[in-house]
Amino acid sequence: QQLWVGTMQGTVHRYRPQDERLTTFPLFTRFDINDQSGYIFDFYQDRIGRIWASSWHGGVFVFNPQDEDWSRLGHDPRDPNSLPSNRTSVFHEDHTGKIWLGTWKGLAYAQSLKAFEVLSLDSMPVRSASAVETGPAGELWVGTVGSGLWQHDSLGVSIVDSQSEERQLM
Image (tube, rainbow, N blue to C red; front, top):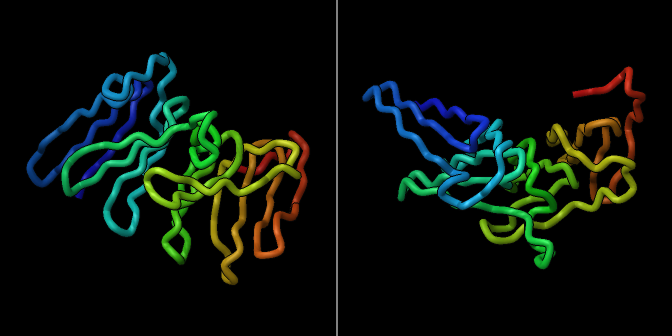
């Protein structure tokens, strides 16, 4: 049992109540990210026990509990297999074990800790994925900021509900 907390300075704290131990991980300092708005705001524990942390400008950080160490996964404009954006928002693990990451420039899944496959959401007017879930037939449902609800299946991406600013879904 552990509690993970992110800060606005790019730091993660882990509290383990069983031994009352608090450990601090200054991730933005460690990975030399010079951004004052380094929010760490979402965590996800995958099937094999890794902790994924999303951030506002630093990409994604992955904690390996075996070696108690962090990796950083970020956007590299020279690498098409990198994250589409360092602004990450949400995680989802589908029934096949793929880890999906919502970013401010689309949706991607981790092929490994070094390569991502980017789901093309080019038909969407705004490509900021804020929620991701898998439906009963394996289809992917994507909630967006300002562009409604979208569905992705073997036929591609289709709009389910377009919205106005007044009806924004989160």
